Length: 87
Image 1 (cartoon, rainbow, N blue to C red):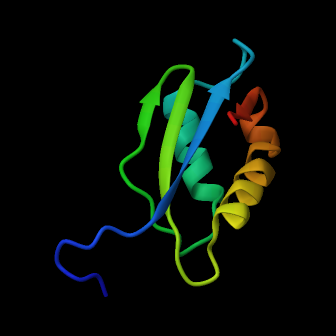
Image 2 (cartoon, helix red, strand yellow):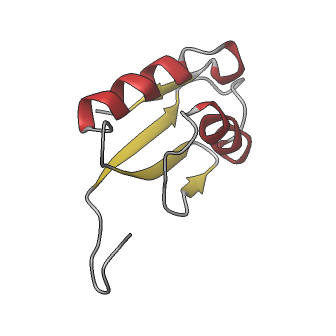
């Protein structure tokens, strides 16, 4: 449970479209969130046609490396072909 005024630590994840034939950011954010592990919490995403930004809360077994690895694996899905994780 969160304490009043407490902001959980989070990692920002940015994906960018590298091919014009790839799905739009609006479609990609839905697919990206849907393919991430159940139970992960993220803020309202920032989405444009060529860029998606998510802030995923850390905690328990979820650390920065775990989040980055999971996002890389999700972006390798054929439904997200043409999108890459920005460093």
